[in-house]
Image (tube, rainbow, N blue to C red; front, side, top):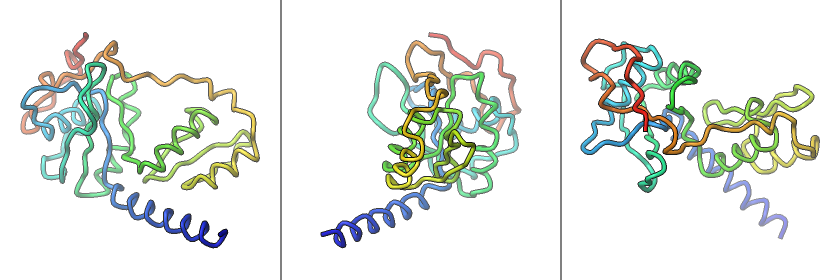
Length: 205
């Protein structure tokens, strides 16, 4: 029975690795207001151009983009964007801190397994001590050791080392709520036009 359990665990891990590899070029953009007949490529490039200060990207860098999830009155659905080149995705990801003062939230497109682990890790060890890179989850433990976790077993090992919650785990994440301002696609520039400033990008509710 133990052998069968081990085989199932290993197979599940391999499937998750394959799924993660297929998502390496993808990012999730949250907080961008939905619009009827929206051009998501133009909207995403406008967001990158204006809010992140990366003006030279052309529509061809995006392989596809679409919203995921069910429509809600509380918050706009996130946009999953797959880039043709990992270097482009990495460039955008490395500039994510520029979005801090905006309602746009940038995250990696994690697998279901890793998203669950990431959520639990942030709750236990704190938001500032937990991050992702190329679909891998990293934790800075209370002893300043950095651990990469990809499975529940990896996470359980960290819990055994530090069973008590980290003080910084009390940090609160800004919720994606209709009470927050959202970026209006109408305020973003067309991808073929010159960059605009940040002025009037946020549409208050």
